[in-house]
Image (cartoon, rainbow, N blue to C red; front, side, top):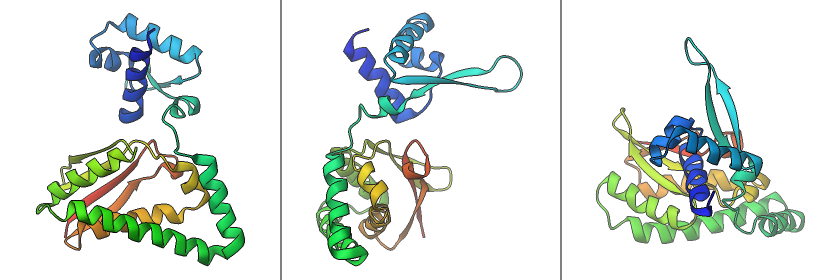
Length: 208
């Protein structure tokens, strides 16, 4: 299996979650047997695993997903260094000092984001600009409409996951950041959270 094919399959599983052999075959225009062979090699490398799910009558469907090692192919930026720095701040300045550091980072990000997003008028345009910013930062972001006259902002990867696990105030500040950037005419709610065991972080954005 060439590296390009492996990367494409891993990226698909990262951004779309568990997939069947049929879904992967259709996505990459390959036969089921070819998709099965690719997945077998990825499984031997410890990058994917499968889970059989009952769906109505008949045999369960087999879904393939990334393992922890497979997820590690999408790196957490400077993970250990960031965690060490956060621990040092907590030890030297306490929780209050850590909170002030997080707020400073949020304020700086807010200025950068607003400079980019405030040029747009509609909520969808603002979200598209925000997605572009987050995607460049490594969050593998995307946005889609919902059936409830709102939007779903999805981040398929968190490049600062280790830091967020050490200091969950970072996640709270991120939610506040999105609300401040998009403005008071909408409501931002987190619906999926990687640190709570979800595959991704997702936010529902609706008009007030």
